[in-house]
Image (tube, rainbow, N blue to C red; front, side, top):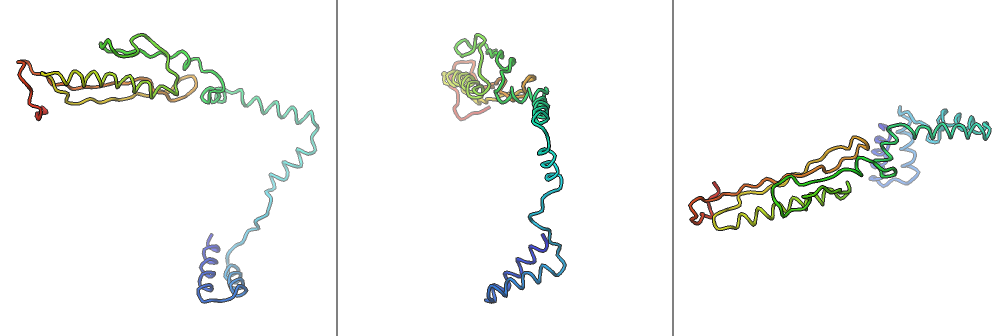
Length: 191
């Protein structure tokens, strides 16, 4: 690395003075030979070349046995979990996961338990929480009420079977100020 930086600097200084290509090449080689260690680029690692020679000398039966042993690596619990996470195999936990609304609002979705695909869960849960926000806005537009705030939080969990991160639910928090005497509320007051 040091030789390359120094060589680049020598190259630039000669180029700036207008020297010919041969002079630039001589200066580059002179600078690199001043103490920089140069490694051959085309050297083949010994481990790689030995592995190739060993493999070439094996019989087809030996190669087949090696392939079968290598496929057993894919039978480990970690590999099974990865296949489920990638959707190659079916994750029973994700297939049987049900969502249900826990609020007392009767006009929102998921009052009865329903399945949501893990890939669609963020959008579906957010749409459900927006129904709660719409109800809060409607309540806040009444004459004796004012919507102060509405916030939505999505919760995530990790599936214990496949390890996939999924949206496990949501929470809508609303603050509505009501007047008790029925008089009109000051629209500028936030307390």
